[in-house]
Length: 91
Image 1 (cartoon, rainbow, N blue to C red):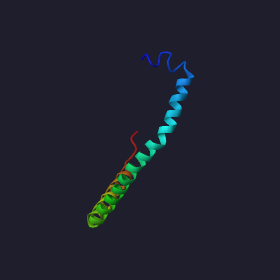
Image 2: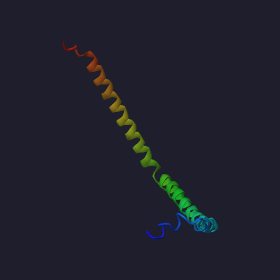
Image 3: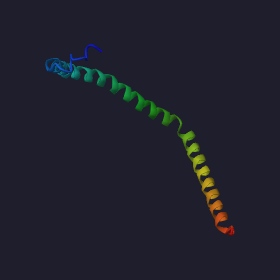
Image 4: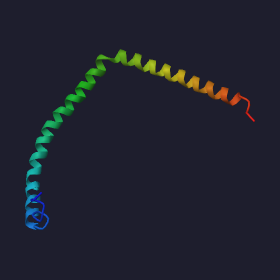
């Protein structure tokens, strides 16, 4: 890496030139990135809304299924804890 072997490390002017160049180019790069990111973000949000609106019934069914499974798991855990607390202690 000949560029870094005493070139930039020891040369303050080169470092300042790179810093100034970056400061001048950064606003243009940020503007371009913002112009691309905003439509992509909006498209993702619109897609999410559309997905939600077209699948409300399926989501409700899925929610009910998850609630049922959670209730079953909770009942099993409580039964296991009750059974464990009623076992006689081993000497």
